[in-house]
Length: 89
Image (cartoon, rainbow, N blue to C red):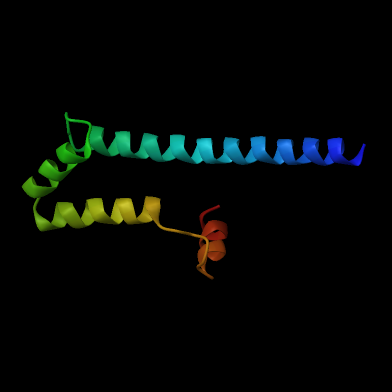
């Protein structure tokens, strides 16, 4: 009896974990798609993005770089990450 309950709990946790990861992947994919649309990049690949970056001036490049840094920065190890989340809400 105990093993079946344990397996059920672990299964539920696994499903929840997969759902959280899938949600994060979808959010990031939506972000990248938005970048491609915003900058008018027709080739939806890293090569198309690289070509667009080569055409940009320094100001545009720094703006794009900041957007990517903000979206893909790791929030797990910073002490001020929680303060930022509460400040935004």
